[in-house]
Image 1 (cartoon, rainbow, N blue to C red):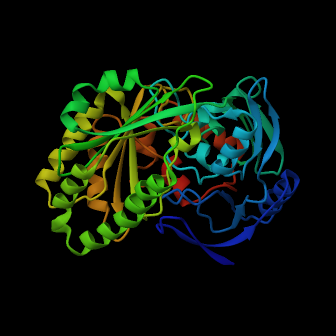
Image 2 (image 1 turned 135 degrees about the vertical axis):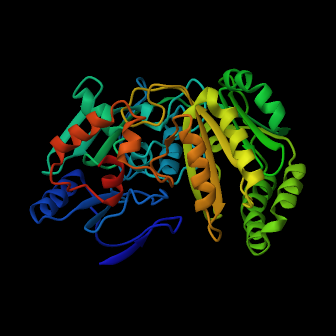
Length: 431
């Protein structure tokens, strides 16, 4: 037995570890555990804040199942093993002349963990990472291997793409990639009033638009990432500027500031104002994946809610009103992103164009009052919580917002009636 802790330090579990290196070994581990009446749970990078990856049985660490199995440059279809880290995949794809269409803002997760929890980036015409999946191989509770796609076993495919680890263990993922491309990144300070006034135009007029609002101020940082023509010369940030902005200021200094304001929370509004005023515009052109993702070393807790896109201004206004009424001081910006509707059963964007609002709290500070307040505000507009980030919802409340929730549960009952892949989190959100 060994003690496992997730990245955020919000979950600990005593587990028996298995590290299969092949799909066949993975099948044998799952089948053996089921025969002994043990539960099994695959764990990726441990970047979920919830206990979605916890188990009291066998923890599958899939780092030995990593790498590209097959790549077809003509079609853009690339099959990878489930334990492949996104940052490793991005480098490999670039060498092949390929890239993923969209990514989130960190790239340390495994491919299987990222799609299973609904990881997403931003872009009004684009879905989350799972919408780029074209086929899956899934190890079921009896150890059998099931392949699914939109054409072959479409219900299993629509369920397993954002499957929460509830149906089986993903062995391989086939992704739809495209020719490698570069992005022009433009970051600039603005005000919340200005951004909200032009929000529809900003979301529609940029390939990838997001912004960060600094609580207790009217200041925001905007990020607009747009494709450049093939052959455009890359103009990445210089090594010194990249280190200063993305490592020293965004991580080292930010952590120090949060340590200080943890001891003296009353300083937070003033610190936020100073930080917002210190923002400066910057622009660069780089490989797509280098623009999408940034290093994150400061520990925090996070909640993220998916709401109907038109409701984003209302939710931000209500969060600001709650902060004005409460005594809470929040030092982390609120991150706002956008995604297109999809048809995956438990995707947070299923059936509707979506706005995402992510709230954070430094890991040394209490997060629950703030998160519960934001959750209540989001629920008023039929919000859906990110599966890998903290929330307080249960199966009954989630069934009301996911049209295919009951269908998901029925398929799970069929594939895993003994709950080989179950845990307390899944019991809570699925029943």
